[in-house]
Length: 311
Image (cartoon, rainbow, N blue to C red; front, side, top):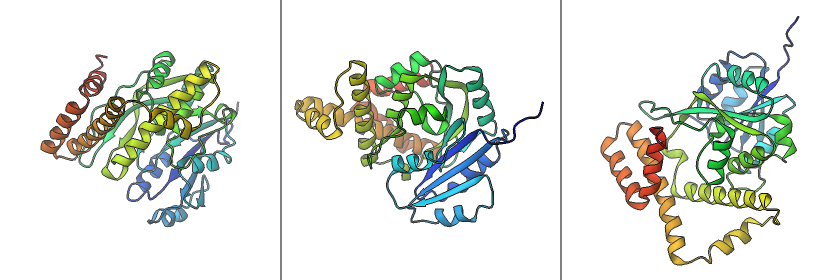
């Protein structure tokens, strides 16, 4: 029996100012052991050399789209329109895939028809070295439960999903400036099962260019809003707009608002500590961990226990 050589995986990457890491990310896809893939890269109005690099790629398997800057959700939905394959993989412009990633994930989805989306474990990659594997739950019930609680249980650039399921839920959020992956995870978990492979298949690059206070506030707000929308769908309540939800939330007491702000600051310091520790700046890294613990001791302990696989 002959094997169909046509692609059945579309790898979708959105890029905004991806240099100097972009080439390494693209090459990690070109080095995949699984042959039946094509890649769609949406340049979301980059102002660095990303566009020139992408235009220099001489590979018939790669399609490059340039658009004005509109945010990752718009760029993702733009690329999604060109995905006509059975499976869709996501990839970030600064991460590195294991060569066997697509091969293992395609085999998993083919063997588990009830699973609509599969990710993997990740290894944080810093300036000087990589860290330990960050353990993520592997079964649907644990993953979905953690996502509903606002706990990180999947890593977006690791995922492979069934294209028709993603299109069936309407793709990604349309709002500019929103972080869309959490909402997508929850909605995909409502129409199919979620899973993570037990092995790490992606090095997740952490650097200061991707983390700041504004970023963390937007991220936490998006997670909170996605969880609220999921609750409303589950309880058959009408959907609420982003503006209306946060207008209600902002009327909460001073202590509640302060606690949320401290949690965001604690998470920011934790992420920055990871960057410092993997960049050889041990003293500053441990100082940031201390700040994180002081602002939200429960959050830090829970994260450390999860990394030790004790929680």
